Amino acid sequence: MPELPEVETVARDLRPRLVGATIVGARCSWSRTLRTHGPDAFAELVAGHRVEAVGRRAKQLVVVLSGELALTIHLKMTGQLFVVPAEAPQDPYVRLVLELADGRELRFRDIRKFGKVGLYERDPLTGELVAEAGGAAVFGAIGPEPLDEAFTVRDFRRRLRARKGRLKPLLLDQAFLAGIGNIYADEALWQARLHPLRTARTLRPADERRLYQAIRAVLAEAVERRGSSVDDYTAPDGDGSMQERLQVYQRTGEPCPRCARPIRRIVIGARSTHFCSWCQRLPAGDRAGSRAILRTMTRGAVRTGRRWSELAGEGALGLTRDEAARAAADAAAARADRTRRAAATRRAAARAAAGSP
Ligand SMILES: [Zn+2]
Image (tube, rainbow, N blue to C red; front, side):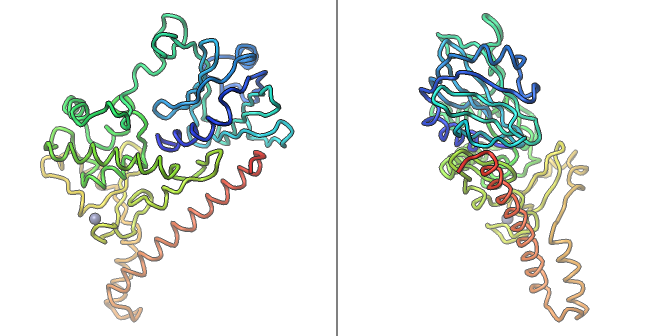
């Protein structure tokens, strides 16, 4: 699912295309895409409004409209946005279309249909989005933006010290910090050399600072590289390149870039978690209660590698143990590479089907 860097990239790509454009109508073919209104009411309310700004809050796009209205767009698993001429052929996965006065359309394409678009009033004084005048703020429960200049290591420490949970679920909690999902939680923890099952209360001040710096560095690099185009994420100006820089995410069995030992995978709260059990040690105090989760550990190619090593030991393959382990790691890397290329082909097909270059 697109996280902070991916949604930020989509916002930046859309901004020059949409700011100043006037919406004249809307067509919706899957009413559950709309979070706040039925298709007819939605079309009537957005018509005539001009796009004033395109931004992001946490993992959602925020399209500010004239007349103190704003749209929120949550891409979820497979949401994609394209701005195309109205005459471009429309494929069946387009769930919502905003018709623009200049003959173009903003199309929301979403194969899995988990994406959501909301229409809210905007408080002219605070800029907060509210479901209705005087109501609760739409983003009221969301934590701070980790890349905000105003977000300091002191703020991060204060928030961490108020929490007792394990680091992986904590980083995914949008009330703790905004915009981090599975990819960048795993990457930041690896970079900070902290085990995903480590609890916040066992961190020393140096650990807290390393984690703060790792989160900001990983997210900033990902924004610069237009996000990680894994699975279905693509932006109006094309794919990102951060997937080539991910050190552990979806690299189970490949060598850790720091110590060359194989990357491990465990499941925490139904989410795949990738880490290096050598570089990211779990202190004894945090091991209690972790055993059930650690039993889910997948060693990927290591398991295969071990079998190969046994065979190598018996002389069956004519390989040394090291050669067998390398062969297994190469096989894992080749498998991962095939998956990545298949996804890239799918994204290119999506752009073509949406009538985008
Ligand atoms: Zn390592």
